[in-house]
Image (cartoon, rainbow, N blue to C red; front, top):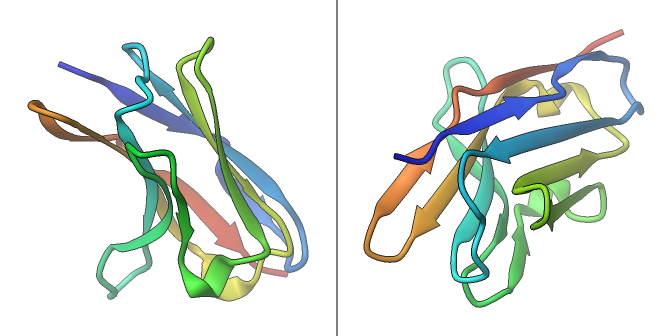
Length: 116
């Protein structure tokens, strides 16, 4: 059973930055699809950024140019660097792993609040 633990959320002013981390309890393989999702109150969970199993990087249109997904395989950690944050980025952010033959795993989420 894979465990994913997010950290790095908090309260930040508009225009500020945060870096989220997702520590995996297992090696992150290049064939794993690693993603960040978010869910704002009253809204459906949406994909924010993804590194596919084939190595492609995808971003939601709303975060392109502001967010960057990256991984440190030695530390088994996925990151989401978030810059130029806006109030509409306020949400609970979730880490997701999809592994061939095993299915997907979710972290518990970390709250990001963008407010002055």
